[in-house]
Length: 263
Length: 305
Image (cartoon, rainbow over the protein chains, first blue to last red):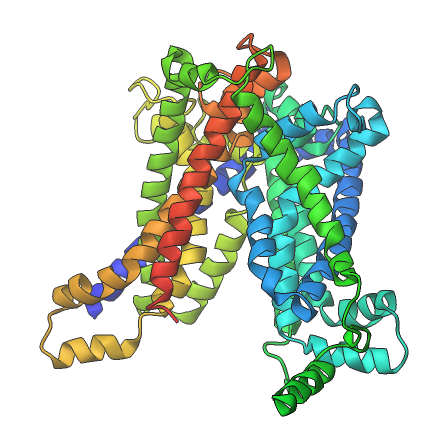
């Protein structure tokens, strides 16, 4: 057992070194902008760059719309599947897994060919349309995570009883979903939302191929042209990912663990 | 007979919602899932099918296998698939073994509790930290002026670049991909290791098994399907990734996603249908990988309940 613990510590130490050295190195590199001394100049330059602010704001907006679309799409579907059409579950689960099978670059390639300005649905004909298509594309990419999160949330509540109770009180479908189901799975929805946010905020492939001024292409552009700013941006991006994941972890603590089913 | 039919009707009336009582009704319950299916059809299935069908057509719209054949005959395309598969394979295999070792260390190594929880938290973050910033981080680490390169050179007198190391190669990319592959492995495989019941170890020990025998005859056979399944998942994960590679090496590294990116941007293959075939090839590789993954996962679920 003694030797076992030694090996465990060794493996853990090597792993920790592999993961922390790049982070430390990136941070150190980001401080080197001013010759000879450590300074936060790179951060000041980056944060003061108007293109940083514009692209970041753009990506945040896109992420918010993506989350809204994802929730609107996933919550009613997952609810309905649980309530009325459990036999469709495998089909829906299979579809929600497809974005993990089909690479993002292939999906966006399909969009570009199908929704060009000469097509019956010319999403790409206007800037607004392209923004919409970008949101749709991100919602597609986030579908596996969003669906899983919401479905796990629904598993912990008694969908049927809640629905019947609401119906007896005279609620319509919209009321049931918006005022009964959604608040009950809010924590699950929020974890899906933050994961979506983490995915969307720095995404490069879709934004770049659809030519939208998003944060991901901006990062790539800075990386190709500057020395110290990319390191500062990497630190910022890591902090954002870390923040999103921490929120998900904290939310998980509030999530109910199992259903209080009467049977 | 009559009795039976009455009770079935009664059952139906009790379990079905009010509007379902009448014998016939419009399939309105489909309306609830219609938005989802329409969305999936329009923005997931049809765009993909469009490319797949296009891969089997020529410029005149006739069906042909020429594009698919060209995937194998065109030297540059064949090379790009080969490099992509090589990078995905090695990053998946190394990532899986290292991830497995770390998962075993934190679950079974007798380490303090905080080690496990902090590793799991960090893995959740790192497995999602991919894309462009990850490339920056490794350039700042192992690039020509990176911290590790400089320390090795100035402190230890080892100039890794003089020794022929270059981070902007496929091996460099494998090292970078490990940053999200290892954590992903840890996240997926830890529950499987948790599923190894303590009783099995005790039972094996009671029967006089050595540690090695316990591992060879219990642990490895039980973990094998989850392990292999996750390796395949990591493979697909690396195969479709583009942002990190693109930010890392620009378009200099000849891997399939970067080739496809260039093709979408500017038809570098001078044949749109060959581009479709390139995309089709990617779907085939990741699709096959996922079929194997699902197969292995169902096998592993027999033990790890």
